[in-house]
Image 1 (spheres, rainbow over the protein chains, first blue to last red):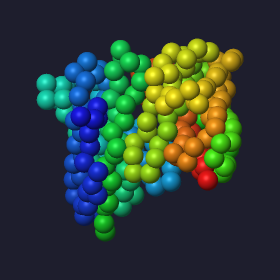
Image 2: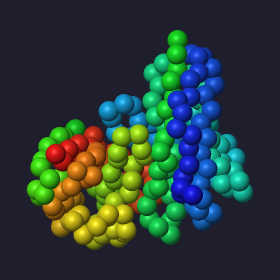
Image 3: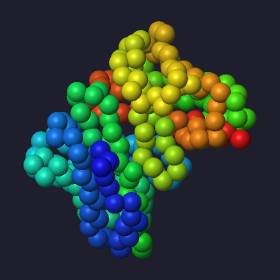
Image 4: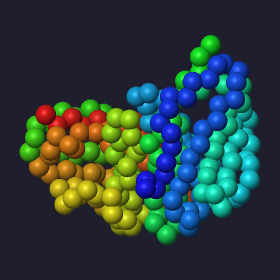
Length: 111
Length: 113
């Protein structure tokens, strides 16, 4: 079992719809959870982080965390073509001092 | 600019050669990470520095890989006797604290022929 699992996609949504990206992780000791966006040919950039169970909203983005289910999600409301990218889920376990990334989900928003 | 700087952006080498990749982190960032990313995959952890010391090098694939950060700022990733399987984008990231909020450089694309 991989430490951080994501559906590779592509996830295709129409412009204006809600995109839902999901991630599961294996280490119950994980403390912090991150979503990075990576445009094709570019490096990852941090868009959201969440530490506590529940929802965290930032503009059109909402991160959701359920530690009991070891599940993290990212919702993108009013999706735009500029949101088309690969979204990387990353999990930080303080005991290991490193951020572990999933393989990413490719999102395609079509006009 | 004030971002993470990596050089070279592209490196093509022959199998068996030695390669050095350089990373200049954001000023003041004490934590520095090296990752490797292959096509269609997420970044794979290689090594983490806190200051000058390697706090975690568990991701280095074998003893052909080595990294240094002698003055707690610039870091160099060194790969000896390169193999075709080493071809990937090598990403460097820095952080004010080792807590997952990483700022990545644009990467060094290594191609081993």
